[in-house]
Amino acid sequence: MVDKKAQSDRLKISKFKLDSLLDITISINANLPTEELLSKYELILRNNLGIGKILIFKHSGKWECLLNGGFPKHFETIDVESRLLGICEIFFGAPDLGFEGVDIIIPVYNNNVHLAFIFIGDIEEEGEGMSPALKHLNFIQTLSSIIIVAIENIRLFNESLRQEALKKELELAAKMQKMLIPENSKMPKNPKIVVNGFYFPHYEVGGDYYDCIRLSETKTGICIADVSGKGISAAILMSNFQASLRALFTWDIELEVLIKKLNSIVVINASGEKFITLFVARYDHETSVLEYINAAHNPPVLYNTVTGQTDHLRTSCVGLGMLDEIPVVHKTEILITDFSKIVCYTDGLSELKYENGKDIGTTEIIRHISNTEPVEVNIRQMIKDLGLPFNNPSTFDDVSIIAADLVK
Image 1 (cartoon, helix red, strand yellow):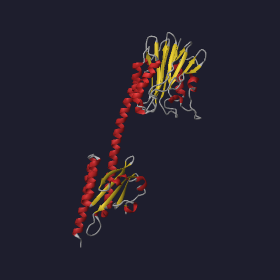
Image 2 (cartoon, rainbow, N blue to C red):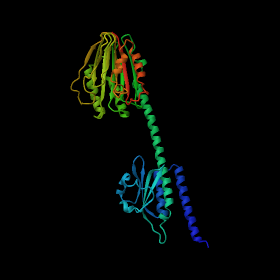
Image 3 (cartoon, rainbow, N blue to C red):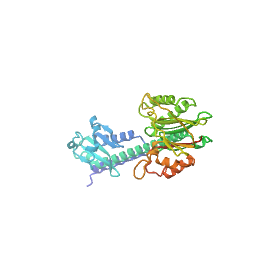
Image 4 (cartoon, rainbow, N blue to C red):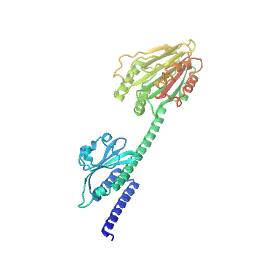
């Protein structure tokens, strides 16, 4: 004879399970936030299955406590990596592992990787028979898996939105930064001086900067700079530096004074966390005098096409922002007596590697400019030979070059 009460109880349990799964599924499809999903999950376990304590550890880049319903606070700091990753099936007798008050540990997987651990404690015992929590353990595991995977999907979706927003911000920042780099078509090209540049940020934005400024009818300013570090913070500091340099660099300011003023600005803006290397020069078309200061930047190469002499315009003082005050600044003046070429660059170029692993230094610059062709042609060929910007596997930093033909 059929036990009608038992049959009725089984139907009620089946209906409860289906209703619970349907409610959770509808909630997930309605894009309810994580907090509400966890609240529904906890309510089902507490009210319908007699579970008094629930704790969830979930991996979201790192292990963290997602829910603690009733366990001591110190449980939230359990080292999951060392104490739980060995649990691959539903585990009973957790006190043996040192987890007092934990009756059951349920692992949750996604693609065969641990995604979460559920602690269950303070299980309500029925007067007769098995506890509801134990009786319906498979249901609890299924429900837990659905909830955890849904929460992970919410996290991944939100992360993708954040990454997309960041990508758009970086694209905008890159466009704005490129506006700070002068286009070749807008740089001086006259019988006395012809200037060209090449700019390739390793990331969307970078910490390199070069510029060419018409200071007067007879004087042109050239500079190249590199912020220590990479990324957004370097780009922001460099943008501020560009504005400061353009405001201060005039036809008559002493370069020593310019360097000291710029150093004060970098010290304030960088707060000691970054510094800037800078090479700044001013060329007088009438007198053919090139004056410069090298603040710890890579030494530009100066080549005389008539004599074949090559010079490296080496450091004159420390980098900007390294010290609150620069103690000594040396300005150098060079008389350009023949058609000469100057190539300024950042270490993204000089630290490219040959196949033997050695830095190219200035070897490739010297090799390509040691002729009477315009420096624009030389640089274009050098970039091609080096596989820049995308076909050189040793590229790891921003690469910037500004070069000029100086004609007496």
